[in-house]
Length: 124
Image (cartoon, rainbow, N blue to C red; front, side, top):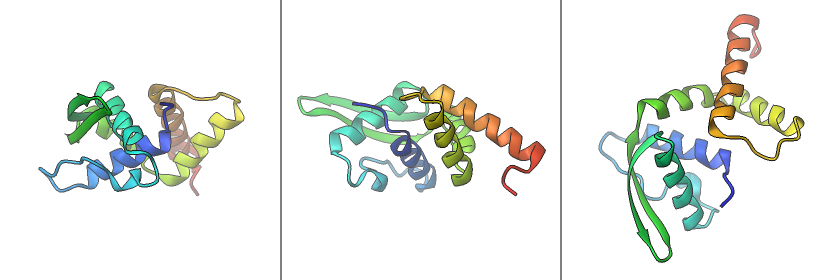
C-alpha cells in the first residue's frame, strides 16, 4: 500500500476531534478508500508512534482501532493542521519531483513553512 498523506492527515484530524474515550475503527475520511487501505494507514500511524491503537491481523488484513493520539501525534498534527500550509507543503514536494516523502520529511517541510509564516507573514 502506497502511503496517502492526505488520508494520514485526515485520520489524525478525526482522532483528535473524537470525544475522549471514543475509539476510531473506520474514520469518515476513509470513505472512498478500500477498508484495508484505511486500516493499513491506521497501522502505519501506530507504527510511527503517532497514535495508540489495538491491531489484530486477520487473513483479509489488519483490523485497527485507534484509542487516542500520542504526544508525537499531536505535534505532527499541529504543523499539518492548517490547510494553507498543508497545500503549500504538498505543492513544494510535487515541484521537487519527489514521488513521495516520509512523515518526518513532511513534518520538516510543514515546520519550515510555519516558521516562515510566523516570521514573514506567509499566510497574510
